[in-house]
Image (cartoon, rainbow over all chains, first blue to last red; front, side, top):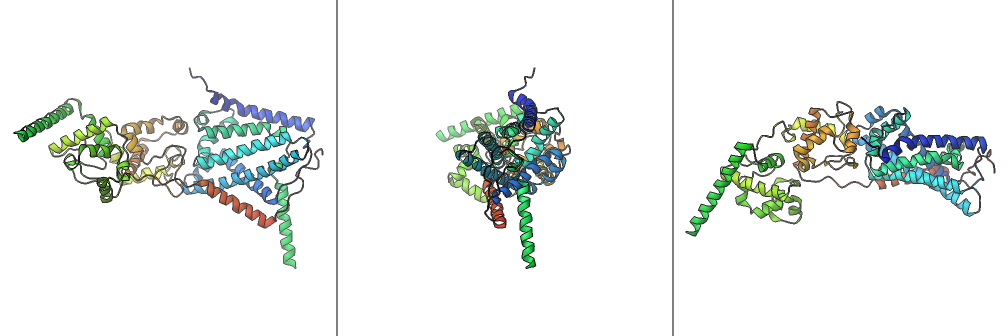
Length: 225
Length: 278
């Protein structure tokens, strides 16, 4: 009889527990806490906000596009030079995202040191996001070509989770760093609503759009002079 | 008298060896040394058939000492890098490094005996190894194997191209994948007998997970083995990996520099939403 390993059981059940945890915590936050984001803290530099947006979009698009259309992504990745370009872009995105998260974490840390209350859970979640992002950077540097690996190994696993028929063999056979990255993301997903961090903290799209609009207006008024 | 005795005993010894070899072949097929030669050496060397990728080994037992030959087979790289003049002369003459074959002491002494016996006979044809081996691949099949490895030709059942997880010497500047082992010398390391079942059954857990639903066809396996055999004929290792981190850090530096140039160094407003409790 084949006894399922701890690893197999973890990759079968933890993602669903994380989703339930996320939904439960999110309902609690919206329904009971009235989406309280806690005391305000200082902002981060424009460059760090830009890094967060570009990094988040790169990582999100890479993971989601590969999960939704693995066939198209595999066709795109069937050439070593294209893979090198995509992987390089992914690495830059992951580094930018880590930079942005670090800037946010630093602000929260400084606020806590200055005596602003309710910072601890937010610091913990941002630290977890930073570790997850760093583990992705580590994977990209240490294991080439992790983008293609995701397309062939991890994406089928994620798709099997979506259709409620988890196929964990490929994940269980993956290197420990790959498993750790996946588990860190699962933890982050489950814990995110607990911290009460506004969405803008991770993806400051409004702030960056505003800057772009201001820059465009300034350029236009400069042209009129 | 002493010279005659030495000659007599050597001749008798050689005849006994030849006799025992031919007896073994006749009764049980080729001996292990003949198989080892056919599998590991015949792609680059002949015994009396002339020069191939490497030298003709007919008479090697007369040109070199047993100790030198055994040490060289044990680790050609160590002999060349260690400054052995004969090894370096051969490297210079043939232009490629002989790969590390991973043979044990017993295999190597068996090969020495086989080469000596073949020299006495005036040459040996490599023994037949049954179905076509990777070493039998022609230029077209080798090219097809390379195209399969690098994803230029797709596997019929949609399996992942090899370069995603494996590197070889021919890979472009950034190199192949590093999730799996470098396959430049896989044919020399495993030989046909161990490589074929690995490709057919995808026996390692990761390979099994990737190719369980998309096994390679017989032709694809043969073409890949032909490519691996071709790579193994040259002992030059793959390039050292490029450090990917610096490329990423440079890209990040450029992006951050661009943001600072475009937007200056001012900070954003307080990052919490006004609707939240303050």
